[in-house]
Length: 315
Length: 224
Image (cartoon, rainbow over all chains, first blue to last red; front, side, top):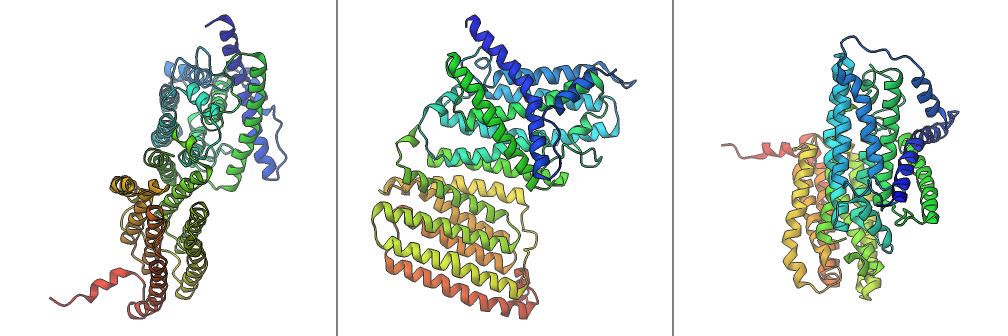
């Protein structure tokens, strides 16, 4: 590991931190266009984060230290995850430090802290949101792990950079198993990031919200960190998807040309993925909370079918 | 990675086999009878495409004929007949299935594992390029069986029966490039007649019990 690797790694993290709110804004913009509304600017999420950082924080009287610590832990976990996922280059110090299973653990840590913090103040909504978040989480996590197992079986490793390298190196072939797992992964992405079939990110309607209920007690810089972390989480999931299902163009060495190409391709992929995500959200209706387990069971089933097809048909 | 060595037509055949399995699961979870019939037509279409592709690949001419038979009978005629029956009988929904959805799905997954184990020795004996799909064919048959077991309405049981026939056809195709033409024609005719007779039967059942729910059949027992 030389100094240049570290520079690439740090700039990769910086790109993730900077691009995440933009990606969030892009999804919102596409959604507004598809729904015939006038779209907010692409910079809107940045403006909101900036505004929140300039406000004074109001903290509930009976909040413990955990409540104050949680935003930093969540944001830190998401930033670390962004460093682990090979979004631009594969041969980096951080991407080789942890594999996909550790990554799932990291995301779970963030979820636990978020839920604990929401329960900490003791309001009814916080507890309700935390419970729902844990319900979604414990159903989504097995599906996500199975998706990773299918890909690991195909590539004989659980390390994401090696998976991305091997899949991008081979010639085009039809993989029914990967197609099934891609569907499962998309469903998990929607559920985990509080997108429409499971949660509506654009509403504060009390009875249906999950993600917003968790953040009700936060204000100012804490809220800014939480919102930024949520945008990063969406960005991270998109990058996991790219690394596994569309790994073309991720740089396997550190030639400046390849790195520039990787960044440009990442931008193209994010643009397409954002549009696709907005399309899914526009054409589907929000499920009742009690129908969410069925949605996630379907995702799990897709992942299991992918696994079976992979193991038994060898495809 | 073994996939790279496969030619593209075999890859497509594998894809179709996987999709057949997926459609079977969709049928297992579907409670609307209209959608169930549409899924059956989709399954028939996938089967027809697979047959066509296999015929082109192997040059076995009677497979073209079975593909035509599949499209004519299973994609167009039988779904049309079933849709007509649904409209005339006014049955659009099945009642709650006997097992809950997630439970049925889990049983379905176990069935897939079981049938792959079952098909392994057969696959080892077969010499066709598609021998890996035998396991999927057995799974499709058994899942269709499960669909029949967990439903109460006569209509969805008939759809399950037809889906089972699709699985048998696919199994014969992957194990030996299709049964002899005479057998295939015979089976096709059997299925056709069975559905026609069952169609008449539905009206009889409804006239007798005022419903298509098969639990009423229990009252036909002899008095103790």
